Structure formats: structure tokens, C-alpha cells
Length: 270
Image: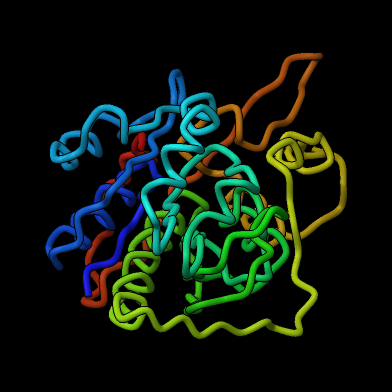
């Protein structure tokens, strides 16, 4: 059977997941895109859903709230969220006949919330990708499918995030055949897990390098790797004479043949 899916998303991963659905003959009956100024891939998602009337495309949280009645009339099987940056209200989560699902770049219940690669590198918590049922509490619903990923010694938060997005796509591809048949099997792990707000990353206790504190080279390197993203304001920093300096790192393994590593080019923008 063809499922009646409302697709909510942003970022390149959302485009890839939507392409996978379209390749399998699934045509969303509604599209929820991020609103300005934060939207990065709203136009790409819209272009892939040219079959939809404008009334079935909802932009930003205002569009979603205003469109609840319209969504309710669509007789949804699933609401699928892929890096959708807005909170989905409870009345929308209750609409699908089978489930509202979210794809998250973490091995839930570890690292619910924001900046999952950074926290996994900082505290050594498990990291991976999870498809889970959406509930009002962020990233707290029952798990449909998850896979773990082992960071490499050279991973930064930025490189690890790229690997996590690839794993998220794999997790969705593996889970969808059963979901497409209406089979939803979930589990609830007994681990306590962890949770972080976006603001937690910007706490000086997390970002600041104390130049006089006794430590080890390994701890400093782990700190710098964990705070190397595509944004300088997320980087670690130290202060000299009242002026703040930011630090990001490039890490590259030597080739197996003993040759010279490639010249690092710095973390690219998303």
C-alpha cells in the first residue's frame, strides 16, 4: 500500500530521505518546511513536491499551526520529521493513524537535543542514528530503529556529523520497508541517556580553555575536536590580555602506505 505521509524537514539529509521515498513511489500528501531565516533546503523540498497544492505546503511554525485542520483532513498514516527545526505541536503529533516519526543524529536515549557529535566526543557517550516515535518531550519517544557508530580518533564534531547523516539515511532506508507495510515495532531502552540544550554548548565551562590548568594533551585534543564544527562561535576559546581567541583543528590520518597526508582545508560550510 502507498502510505499517506506528511513530510517535515530541512537540510540536505531531508532532501535525500525525500528522494528515497519518491524513488519508492511514495508521494507525500503534505510538506512542512522550515521558515525563514533558518531554512536551508526549503526550496529543494518544495521542488520535489510539485504535485502538491500550495494549501498542502506549510512553512514554519506559523504555517503548521494554521494548517492543523487541513492536515487533519488528509487522513495521514505518518508524519515524518527529518531535521525539521521547529517543535511539532501535540495536536499535529496526534494526527497520523500509525505514528509521527523523527530521524535524529544520536544513539537515543543518549544525546537527546542539540549538538550530538560534540557531546559524544566530550563525554564519550554512545553515538549513532535513531528513528523514533515523536512525543511532546524532545527525542523521548519509543525507538523504531537505531544503529551505533564508533568515532575515529581523528573525528571532529564536524566530520562526525557528516558520518552521522549518512548513517541516518541508512537507518531510514532499513526501517522504511516495514513502515511502508504499516508495521510499526518499537522498543524502549532501559538506559537513562542524556539531554542537552542548544545553549549548553556556549557555556564558558564548556568552551573555555584554561591556559594555566594542569591537563593532558589527550584531553586538550579531545576538547578541540569536540568543538570543531562549521561555525567559529561554537569553537573553543582562550583569553590573553582580555582578548578572546578561537581554536579549531584539522585532523588527518597518515595514508596506510606511509605517504604524506593530504593538506587539510579546514571544515567546510554546510
